[in-house]
Image (cartoon, rainbow, N blue to C red; front, side):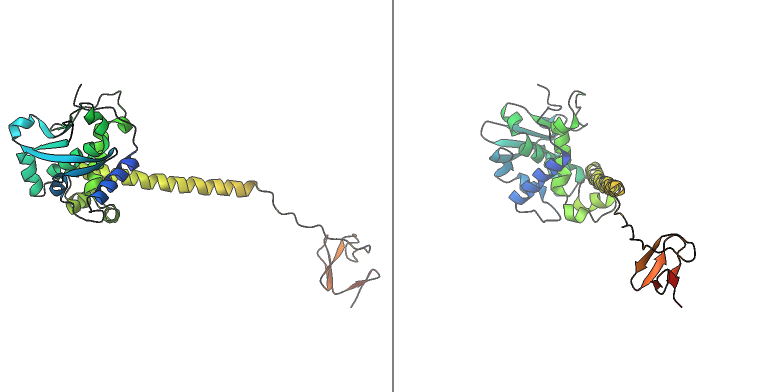
Length: 260
């Protein structure tokens, strides 16, 4: 079985971000601006879609990782996340790529326990994993983890007040690539909301335009004819009288004569 990528249950990006928010809450950092991702990965337990599971972080030699930036597996009892000493050192110093790598592996632990328990090894390649063309983005375990990592590291409420990828990258200590994933995802969400509002407005206007207009009641004409145009189209308007044909207004109309 290849460890480049795995086909998993379909998940929308919004669902993945929701799972990242749940892990934030589980670790008690839901409202934190800066996440200590090393501390989170060093906890003894992790919340997953299959319940709370034992967790162990292992820091190994760079040579042992053999082209992998991070690696997640299951030993039958515990979810094991392995990172190299270099990644651990860089993450401690706040390097965005290293922090993102650890959050990426936490995402695999949260979302892909079934695959891990079946023997899969989720490895984040140093030179980016290759996803087969037959695996769509929503079913790609690697795509899930790439969306999960910035969602876990970034405070959504604060990030939505920022206007650029670079601001997000610097503010939350994430790689620029992760910041781009997050920024584009949020922008797409905003565009969809704006598009939905536009379609709703056009639909409402169309419905209103097709609705029958209230009819204007036809006035009740008097038996007398208008003394100006001789048409029998005189009707009362309050205390006065008006001819619908020529628009003449009378102070009073009696016995067919216009009063002074």
